[in-house]
Length: 418
Length: 158
Picture (cartoon, each protein chain N blue to C red):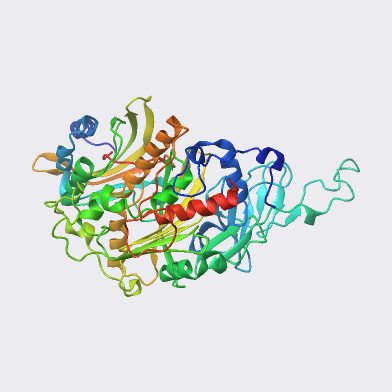
């Protein structure tokens, strides 16, 4: 099931775009409720895969994690055979969002309202008083348990990462990503067993797409983020490349850290601090891992709801949970690998100080998204200007471009028919 | 456990001084509340309760704390805000040889410009305090916060 809203209402949206391109995004794309509702329908509940979690979060049969696809609450649960299901958290009886715990382990899923009882595959096992009491009441004769299971999403598990989709006709996850983005994914997730380090959760008062834009924007990290510039983690003069899938909805920003940063090659970059030295060098105790190859950072944006982060030794998935046009929750799941030694685990945890809601570099990102949203709200006739390196869409071997943002909006306009 | 009333009073005064420092934004003084190798950690209750090691912020040693202060004062771009700490009565869980394991509830209220004050972080400090040459210092300070979602970003120490 996908389109669950009447198309007559949906069809009344007028395109807010002023031109045919994708480089000037109008304010309404970030603020309009009707546009947002169409995004939920066509993007989050349509034929697009959403990240829901890591396999290691539910290690045993009966283990579950509650999360969401778009705004719809779902439960990722492992069944007795060890397979992973993603079930909508909505009782088939009276719509109760019956699962309120974030994680746990259960024999069956029970809605406490009337004790409707489902197995790990979402199949309805039983209904109290189905046959009435003392000959009175009960369900009608044509009531069949198999007609009233939990809504079951299509699931793909790839190398420990779990994706789900409400539309069962969606293409395979491999086709969905395309060869270049799949290669970026496989670089981190090559089948090695992962180890869960924990979560960070932040609520960002901005449109969900602004976070995707942020990680499709190689222009800002070397400017906004002093840490990246000064310590060479992300600079405009680092060797780098930008890749996209054929629809330009996903992207990967891949780069190589400068070993020595002696001066600022960019005139006027005020965030560079020549004399900045760490009191504690361990904060940037980077150890090259063989699987990186020559690249030290790979940021993959998978449309519509996840970013895969490898920035030196810090690894995370960053999940977007939209909550209306003007806010979203951003959930970071940090992880390592089973063969990490204690020093490497400690290093990954220490470098996590750069990321998340308090991160030396990521705290800024949430803030600038909030202020962009404020600007869109105050001027509904505004359009952005994403024309660094022109108006075209395509891969690049440098960072001075907004091509990935234009790519996402080119695809968005097709899907949204706006 | 019952601790000597005088040390209880000194510990309360220590927390009052800590609150005053972070409320006034005297961040340059903040590392002085810690021993040289202290561990300061801000951690979601979700992670703490499940023994997941990830912290929102994890600073080991005063040098790393100084780097954080440099970060908040010079590198992290954010909207300005005041923070007000309301720290409860310290519960001394263990005391021996000048070391005190202390747990205490806290609330941090954030006030940004142009908007009303809001509850920003609520939780408990799980601390170890030691006496160094007659002065109390944190050897460990874990800020375990209950609030499930951080309202956008967390910049200043709590």
